[in-house]
Figure 1 (cartoon, each protein chain N blue to C red):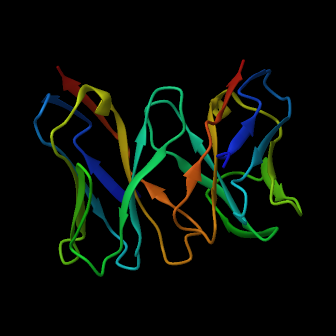
Figure 2 (tube, one colour; figure 1 turned 90 degrees about the vertical axis):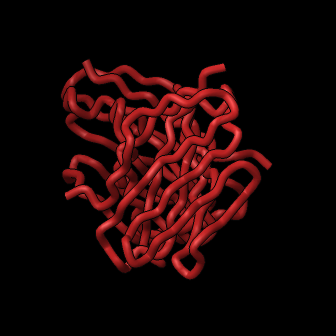
Amino acid sequence: QQQVKQSPQSLIVQKGGISIINCAYENTAFDYFPWYQQFPGKGPALLIAIRPDVSEKKEGRFTISFNKSAKQFSLHIMDSQPGDSATYFCAATLNTGNQFYFGTGTSLTVIP
Amino acid sequence: DAGVTQSPTHLIKTRGQQVTLRCSPISGHKSVSWYQQVLGQGPQFIFQYYEKEERGRGNFPDRFSARQFPNYSSELNVNALLLGDSALYLCASSWTGDEQYFGPGTRLTVT
């Protein structure tokens, strides 16, 4: 059973546009929700993370929106740039952080 | 500060062989986790170690084992390799368990 479901599988956005990636989770005990960015041949890099006590977190051009009742969270990339072209993964874990459950990834392409 | 380091970068093995992958965490981090990432998929959790104790184990067969050393570095061992074990093996370190920082991975190819 997929604990974290991610969509879309791929996304093409014009430079300067907004990229939106969505994730839904099953386990209401999850309490830490990070987003990772991965370039080909590299390990995932932590972008931004949120805990369920807040509904939104913003860091630069990256914003996480969190809807606890719907068990959904999303990543918004404002003013998308070609350098943002990468695969993005959402994840979730329990407070012990001893197992992260990852989504299946979204391949983002930003067209100049 | 140096990030998470992993060795080797690439590895080619034959079915049935055994392999050992190594990971050095970020200085000060006491937790190390191992993940398997098959091409086109998200990372799948294999193990987590904290202060040299196993804290979690994912849904992987007993052919997979790991350990953490007093300096918090870690090794992942896979015995009796199968073609399906071909993947990118990622190590992540953290202070307590959340905010995990990943290394570049070891690309394992089993032929």
